[in-house]
Length: 337
Image (cartoon, rainbow, N blue to C red):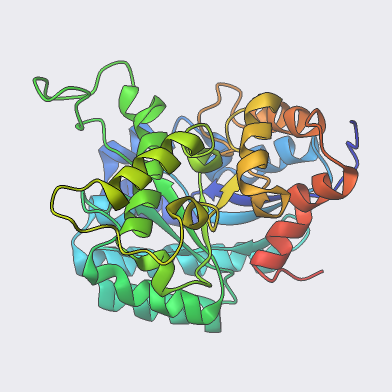
């Protein structure tokens, strides 16, 4: 199937706004030089637009890229950084409506009072279309009680939470080692962290408590689509075979809660793998995304090209393709027509 003229909405495209980049350089120079500088499309709008032009018509929903504010600052400073990033992303959306159709709020997750206030400000005052957070949060799981107010708030707003894995290089691959080797912390650790975050949100009862909570997962839902039958079997054992006699206490099958999540197409291509995600989540829960511009020696060009090519070679209808490219993001984030 080929429909290269389809409008494509990149559901969460990484960016480091130019003025915020200067602040990052002052606050965290080492992280800035290693994680930001090598990726010009993150912060150079001309470089970004040049790549986008190759795949027109394409529009982006902006998210702050690469460095969570809680990784580089204490609670008060992190909250200040989040506000600065959100303000500048709002400016970019307003200045370039033909490029950017919205943004997702950056939150200081080490300062929940400020995070809740910023959620309200970003959505109500800046017109943001959801919030963006990382897993783990300073090595903490997302199902801790301290994060519950955010889930309640976003359930009321009926706008999505987008979660992005951010395991650190210091997370070893084996307990006998001190650091990860060969980039395994990111290559495989990030999809695993997405998967484990989904599991914790389900088994802790959060997805049941907030049935209209909308959460978008990176890398096509991590390991979940591929291991769907394993999930079913293991959760059945947890329900019926636990030695303490206590099941999970969920009102429906665990696999049904996994299907509540949304997933992006950011696996760098591979139509058969996307079909696995499609078979599990359904066309109405897949959103176009390519991890722009990261994980790509071509600075985002290759990821867009391979992701689009993979979607266009999926065995789906034109209507389903349009859902993935445009409709799902537009409906989920209530984007303007």
